[in-house]
Image 1: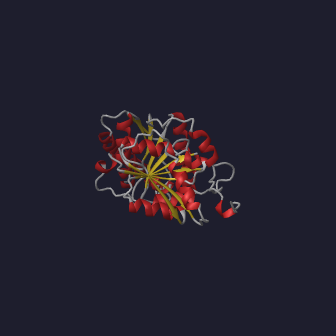
Image 2: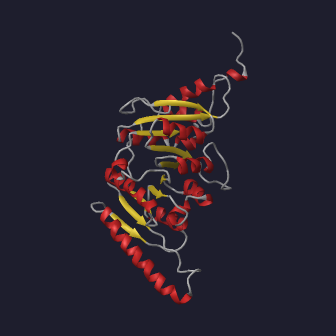
Image 3: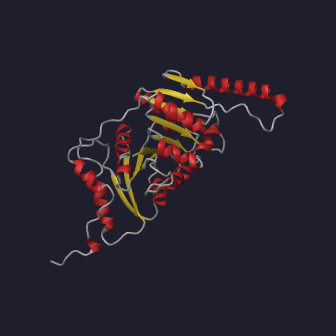
Length: 314
């Protein structure tokens, strides 16, 4: 037998050895439920699109919704100082009106309203810790308020530093059907590079697929594949779902050539995906430390995909 060349060695992705080591000792993933959901809103139409997902997930899990609206300090550079009190009063009345509307949407669910002042992310980070939040839900269609926090460096803080999974409803998610769409995920796409960070998201993808009797699609992208790597990666992908996992249909595994974001966007379109699940690395040291799923990949997916994206910090 000829010696194995470097081009024919078994494919070994980051974290794969540890995953295989643990796989034989782990039962099928338990059903994941959420107890405390943080719904961040600026009372815009963008966050209104995200609300049905918060409501439906809370109903299924029996969770409490903590609705937060961060109030900015009363500084109005484009308004004469003499008009500041009146402007502040109008904003207060606007918030009260929107709160009453939101109250109607949340009837029958345990919930509370929070109106802290100051920086959006700093306040949300404190609430996540104080309220033991296990899911943060955001809607973003604009460039102000909550819509702005998904842009640039603050988005990276959310994906990398939030001490809970983050469900982001991006600008391309349709709003017409609202609760009918949010009530059911028919197809869940889980994208992984086999790193420990991305594998941390696998139980969430499996649980959502099982809870909704959805098709589970597992995706791995290889930008430059050597001979034999595609087949080896495909076999590895099949091992992500443990034996004994009760899914309505057999998981479908895809290994694609190309950049991760491009592969994810194509797969979501081809399979009419209702939820994308990815893992992201925790922010250690410099915030721009990169991995297979860097901020840029998560960002590209969130702003272009037509379904919500669940990011899970590894």
